[in-house]
Image 1 (cartoon, helix red, strand yellow):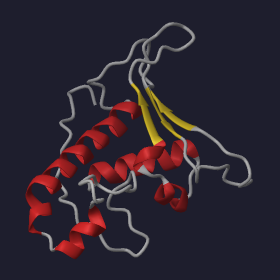
Image 2 (tube, one colour):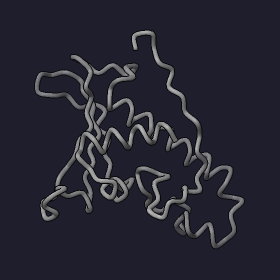
Image 3 (tube, helix red, strand yellow):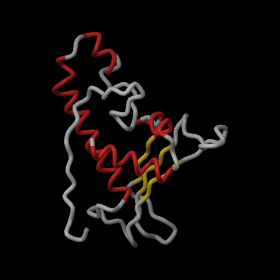
Amino acid sequence: MTLRNKALAVTMILNGWHPIDAYRMMETDVTDVPDYRDRSGHHRPKIIFAGEETHHTKVHAIKVRNTIGCGCQSNHDPRDVRCFYNLVKDYTNEKNKSDEIFMRDCYPRLSKAARLVHVSEEGVLRPINFFRAMNRKGGERCTFVRRFFILVGENM
């Protein structure tokens, strides 16, 4: 929950989003580019947020592509806890683990009607929000939520 809130806050602040913009962001609208090289030739990965509902905050007719990139000096350091890319990537990894646990442990226990809510007829999770437990009605999503603690290094 804490990791999700940090990732949500970072993306909202850096991209200038309102809460509704974060709510509309779907899993399919997010692209990870782990091998991106910037103009200077440094390895700086980025995550691109671009979808059907991603538009300029003030002028809704203008479609935009928002990016969270690596902020490390020179090349990317995957251990740097201050890097925004690492934060969003850690959230994505934890979310994928949570989905695997849901499909393995919780999904078989659901009734037939509840299964149709979460999974398509092919057995694939339906399109879901990138920020999982963010629900407009206020309730939490029923997927398993793991606690995630970031060990802070001595340099912080």
